[in-house]
Length: 154
Picture 1 (cartoon, rainbow, N blue to C red):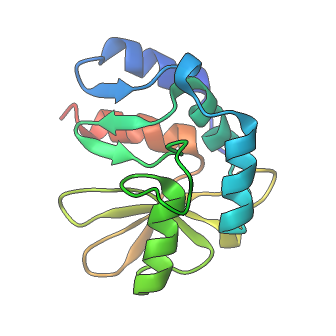
Picture 2: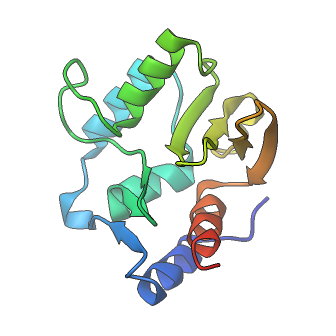
């Protein structure tokens, strides 16, 4: 279980607005889009990720896009839409059905939800290194966001 909360994320965003560029709640997609995305993916979003989508929409940390739902028809969307990314990853063989990628870095790191460990509406986020090795990175999406922001401070 992670001790990180939405409040921790909000504090880091407020203190590092030069580094974090997220949207705002008034621009978030509604529950219909979230439900449709989950249905297409065959995976339920974690509670922390759903809250992120509703509060911050999506955006970037230090220029690294955090995948979200663009609110564009899933048959024509591209870019950092999480549905598009997952379907593309599956087609290309770079992810498994239970690995939902949420961000990639310019250094070849891939961060993904590990749904093989889904429990109590949460699952950990793993970091796949360029070598192909995967390591535990965060217990939930809030911890992931905090760690990514902190990583860009150094």
